[in-house]
Amino acid sequence: MDAQMILIVDDDPDMQELIGAFLVGEGLVVRHALNAEQALSILAKEEPDLILLDIQMPDMDGVTLCRNIRNHYERPILFVSGSKQQEDKVKSLQTGGDDFITKPFDPIELVARVKANLRWSTLLTASSDTKRTIAFPGLKIDLDRYTVTVNQEPVELFAKELQMLITLARHPNQVFHPKQLYRLVWEDDFHYSPNTIKTHIHQLRKKIEPNPALPRYVVTVKGLGYKFNPYGVVEA
Image (tube, rainbow, N blue to C red; front, side, top):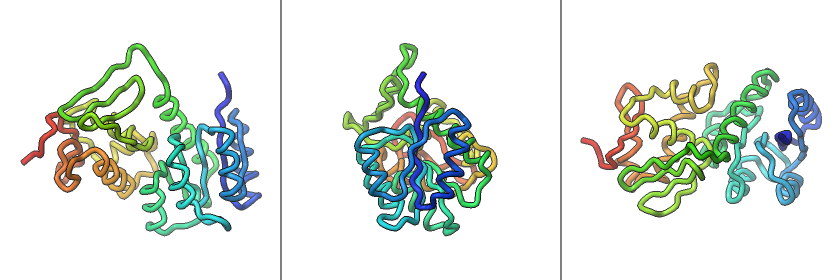
């Protein structure tokens, strides 16, 4: 099996060297880009399995770059940033980021987060004869191709949105606490953020719900969390 490739986009050469050394030590192939221009040049030729993306860069900030490449790149994007502003974290997730890691970080933690996202990426791109289609009124999830259609129209979901939808839809009417969802989708017990779940639920509803303000499928259970309503109707 070919080694998985990681693209590191960061204007700090020392940070590039540090992150790259740990990832190469885990058997991963690493590509380096010091700015958005270099990143776009690499992406025009290759498709990395995951992108590590800094927010603050000289030619184009990471959030804008993420928004631009999400039109044609569907695999995980992890933001690695020195910014501790909650607004930056929310923006990064809203534009298609799958995770957010704050500098300075524990390299062991970074590797663990990268591996968790790579496992999901592999799952979402794999095909198996044992997989099937999950269908509900107005909504279908094809587990062979990992595609979603709403009222027979295809819907583009980012990796974490799709992972969250599959997790919920496989257990209709089961209530998931936000922390439980985070653990299942991000495979991480220690860096739970309620805003991360809230942002992804908001984005998912915008894409699959006819009226996101009155969700049919991803329903809030007040004080407890979220559940998937298999009937496709607005609950009382």
